[in-house]
Image 1 (cartoon, rainbow over the protein chains, first blue to last red):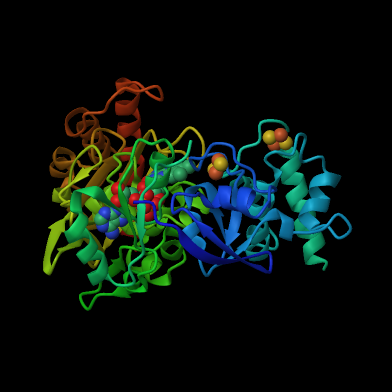
Image 2: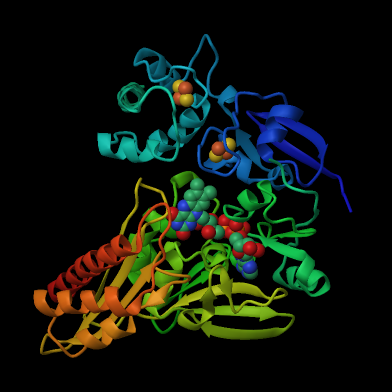
Length: 159
Length: 292
Ligand SMILES: Cc1cc2nc3c(=O)[nH]c(=O)nc-3n(C[C@H](O)[C@H](O)[C@H](O)COP(=O)(O)OP(=O)(O)OC[C@H]3O[C@@H](n4cnc5c(N)ncnc54)[C@H](O)[C@@H]3O)c2cc1C
Ligand code: FES
Ligand code: FES
């Protein structure tokens, strides 16, 4: 009954070929097959948001997709966002504004916020709160995150 | 947890999907956006032997005007697409108003309009909205096609008239009557959570300013989306004043719904919410209808 399926997936600009079981979740594929462990797994039912990645540019829960469904598609994970030497404005702003403590939730927040800021370069604090509402953080409280997103938006607008 | 093993098919056409369903029927499950099905598979509450993934069928993703002035929506249209559609904003403002209440943006990028209808969660927004609008659904099984009115389609908790080898293909929204207006409102503990109670309301005014037609539906107040027949009958023919609306809302909460208690809310609290929210939604719809 088990059928193995060959897939080709582009993640952060690199093309990967792998053979997977259909039941492998996209989150597990990224972590265990590609060793991209920046994508975290909290709940595996779509609630916490820590597994959020970009799928053809849109934020999705990677725990609510199968790896086979990514065949032929383009993904972006937190590893593609920036490097320690050249961080994304969101990453800089999260550090600057103390918008993380343990950091477990951070990759999911960042990947949700990247497309949000691209589509809303000048968001109000209420819009920022709404954008944060699909991700859970158990450490920091969200106030510093709102500050961080506002700062990142400003930096991105100023180029 | 992880899903149990299954055999995976990703047909490219509706015909191929229907053939697979005809062969595998009871053993197979349709995978639409997966935002309800995959969590239940991860918990192993669902262990389908065969999964038929509809995501490679572009022919099921469309939002088009009907000649009558309504909208037809392909089953695999994602919430996000509908949310951004100018045609839905113009011809189905109630849908546009309800969509942002469904889950979170990251769920709406994958979740589908058809999936929400087929899943028939009594706490879901879209079934109640479709019942309020008098939508109908196109189903197909083999070569047999049938249309079912939204109000008849939902028959119980997560249960619809869909046969195991039948596909939901399209949601058709009728044209809106002249001088009609709509409103949607709900209460949830946190933004994006399933609502404790939600209400969709519509009012059509006649030349004298009386309610020529009233539509009122609820979510999260029983085992399915509910059309509030008694409240509708009470308001129809009357001018939408604060008194007539309060009266109709009280009837809805007392006679039209049979809410359950759960860890989120008691029966009394749900009835209280139903009354208050119905009052708000009807008032807003009436204001919008008389404004324009
Ligand atoms: C964290 C979270 C919060 C959520 N909050 C809300 C909320 O507030 N309100 C809300 O309404 N929903 C909510 N949802 C559910 C979401 O809206 C689902 O996307 C939706 O209920 C099902 O749509 P889907 O396309 O994902 O369907 P799937 O999960 O793929 O399928 C659901 C069911 O419908 C069947 N099915 C799907 N399409 C068809 C078809 N065309 N023909 C026949 N059968 C079909 C499937 O076989 C399956 O049984 C939430 C989900 C999550 C993960
Ligand atoms: S792990 Fe995917 S949403 Fe929690
Ligand atoms: S920083 Fe620890 S969960 Fe968010």
